[in-house]
Amino acid sequence: MTVHPGLSNATLPLASSLLEQPVYDREKVKVGVVHFGPGAFHRAHQAYAFHRLLQQDLRFGVCAASLRSDDLRAALAPQDGLYVLAQRDAEARFLAIGSLVERLTAPREPDALRRRLAGAGVRVITSTVTEKGYCLKANGELDLGHPDIAADLKGDTTPRTLVGWLVQAYSDRRAAKLPAFLAAPCDNLSGNGDKLRGAVITFAAARDLDLSRWIEAEAAFANTMVDSITPATDDKLRALVEAECGLKDAWPVQREAFVQWVVQRTDAVEQPDWGAAGATLTSDVGAFERAKLRLLNGAHTAIAYLGLLAGYDTVSKAVADPNLRRFVEQMWSDEITPGLTAPPGLNLASYQSDLLRRFDNPVLSHHLSQIAWDGSQKIPVRLMSSIQDAAIAGRPFRRLALSVAAWMMFVTCRARSGEHIVDPLAATLEHVGNSGLQDASSLVAAFLSIDQVFPREIRSNPLISAALVAAFRRLSDQAPMAIASEL
Ligand code: CS2
Image: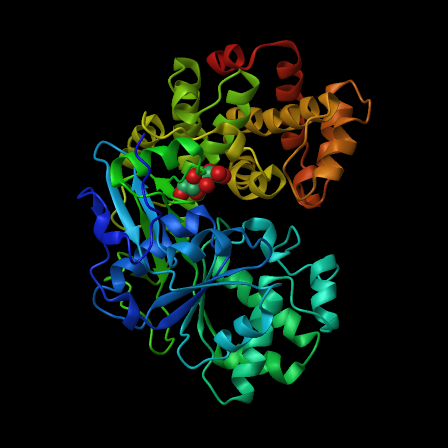
């Protein structure tokens, strides 16, 4: 059994020829970006984009800032911040990504992170803190009652939240007479840049009105749409990377070949050459993000809950079921696409067939249980948005309703079996699931009472509540794939 050396600057020359190495001098890279939430998706997507950009502009190295866990910093420290990105698709690639030239863990080294954010070199902030990380209410505004936001507003400890860190950074930069940076959030929220701007200004105004006015005038926020299917890292991936590259990587990442980043054009100073990073600049991100959030992510969430209830474990296996495949295609064509305007240059029909090809990827094991996390944060933007549009337009939405009802059934089954529910509203969901309510009307009404998921204008719509009750009732009596085949 060959024992391979660990990945690092020094051992890179020992790697197999399969490992594509950085072509820039990492010693000369400057930090120009701070990224909050450097999880697998960031390292497979934005960190890869800046890795590409560094080949011609050494100013945009990344400081990876973890708000909670020290795991990434600890894992990449012996590797000089290097890790392998395995592109797993029809054509396999292994890339040594060198863009994370600094890794900080906020609770462990707050002063270092504060200095970095206040430094002249930083021009862009990006973030993947998941939907819950923005601490927003159902209406997209900052939840000033959120415990972490309330703690950050007191200002007597290290900030816990992205918003708290950004407002502190804007304050420091104003004091140092430095320009504000561009903030480009990369989470699956509609209007993510607008929402982050609103949250930051609300937070700042609650502490210092002058600062909030400075941010309003000086700070740029870009809406962005990000896309690449990125399953979580597992030991099988670690073994594959070691076997193919001849080096051990404590925390490689994997993704499909498809990668897309659409960034809103802003007048921020000293921006990266987004094109060189592989991103598309546009003045209207909205059409791109609605198509992606509703077609890709909406289907993902439907497949996750219906697939799990039917006993499937991965996306590719679930969409191989002809009933579910046809269900998704008809949900797209009859219930989602009629409410969309195609972004420039995108044909929605071919986009949908491309999505199925991506979902079929047999090399990537994209677990439904991963997609099922945080359903309370995903259901509104991925499915309820399309249901609302369809109800207003008088179009059918029974497949969308079945998908939301499948989430309710998934939560109820998990709660009653005592299995953990990964969701920021887990306590609320477990309470509803274990309420003892048996009939579909009462149980659906209990779910609809969760305001962060179903705001009043939705739960008071009789068409929507009746469709959800009918769907939940069917799921109580029939197998999900049988229902899917009959719709
Ligand atoms: C997935 C997304 O886990 C999930 O919720 O739907 O992570 C999805 O893989 C990405 O948005 C694809 O770009």
